[in-house]
Image 1 (cartoon, rainbow, N blue to C red):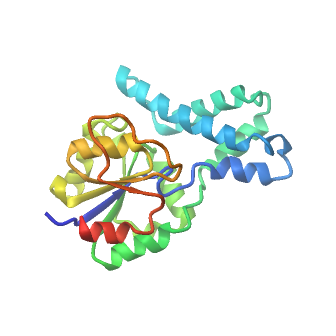
Image 2: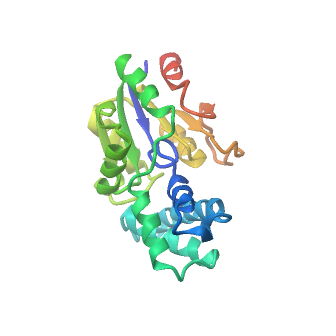
Length: 229
């Protein structure tokens, strides 16, 4: 069946998760980040994801804002920066206004102009997602923003991917699911979606039973992929 609906992960896919640390490092109040912001951002993101997986496995769900804070606290301690509450607060504040990647608005507009439904499906808490979408000016380019908080478990649980069909009434084969997380795109392939992995970091493919159908370095070509999928 032809693709009718394009669904996007949010963090790292539409929104640049390194932007908070990078911006704080450029501000005069935080010179200690000048040489360490990139490593801090990487550790923050990795722990944030690890905590979602671990909580899903053991059934200890909390919202994404909590795991975002927990991941940052680990990263700050690893960088010996955990004694600066002002830095912690600034990084958390900036996370609510992450920049979209440069190609995102035009890509979403092209999809909408071509008649595709577009939405976010994210681990993010609803308030976080609403703030990010508003800050990036993407609200009029999305039909909906779906959060795992509806089902109380993080991706890649099938109950999360089920939200797409429940909202849009689509068959799995009508959905193109797009993520910057190789494991997310791979698991969505196993679920039955057509998939695209935005591999901005040029990472190896995750060793899972399934592989993303398409691999991209950015989202520019996504409308053409949707048309040909």
